Image (cartoon, rainbow, N blue to C red):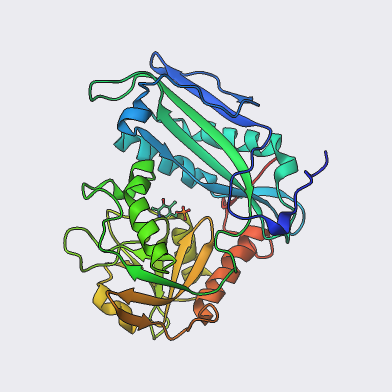
Length: 341
Ligand SMILES: *Cc1c(COP(=O)(O)O)cnc(C)c1O
């Protein structure tokens, strides 16, 4: 086996087709055995459920090379569990969690030549997803589904690394205000596209969405949860039933409490409080933590004391510890690192 001839250090966050992907089909009430395939195309009937009523959910996780040369993934069991919860909300049959993990391993193993080397800053991003595949014209769930996992080598999500971002408070809702904000589904992303394009046109990196009911509490951005550090060094993250339970955020809270001895709480965070915070970061698989330096609320600027040049000191500690755990430099809690055999 030889690594593919890719300039790992120059990779952006984009799609590069790899050799293998995993496919399993649901028909007559059961999943078939599933298999790897080299065929990257999905051929669907024009009336497929996913194309008409957006019946599709997804996940995102990474495989990467540790400092000592092992290929691993980070907490894929939580992706398996979350995909099942997302699927349930959209009437998509569950894909068994142990089969999900097995499929992840198969895809990484088959595409091992695409796993970027340690130290390159790049990773192999895995995209599991499920969608209604048979024709549906009346409003009802599909009766046939496809589960797939493809992968693509990616560089850092935000070019320029850890430079603090300027974000804006959005006038839009991130997700439909009907409680689907806690599932990882294209329908929520479709809702956010106009808002993100508008924010980018105005020079902002991201949107801060407030809760759609009262517009007073911090929810999340389009694809990352918020983490704040108070002036007395406490880690605070918004509690809400309508945000996506980020695996990165949950891991960072654990790291804060058990590795760094910090107090951490998940609670409602009124937007009013944000001006008193010391640090702010966005957490998700793609970037781990992206520091926020400035939040603009309809022309009113909130400048975080950590500034526009670097990550705040506690954010940096959280970042270094979690990435240290992921890369094998720091001992991981039991069950966090899955080795690809
Ligand atoms: C995927 C996602 C996140 C980040 O979750 P991770 O599990 O940390 O990758 C946050 N918010 C939304 C809306 C997401 O889709």
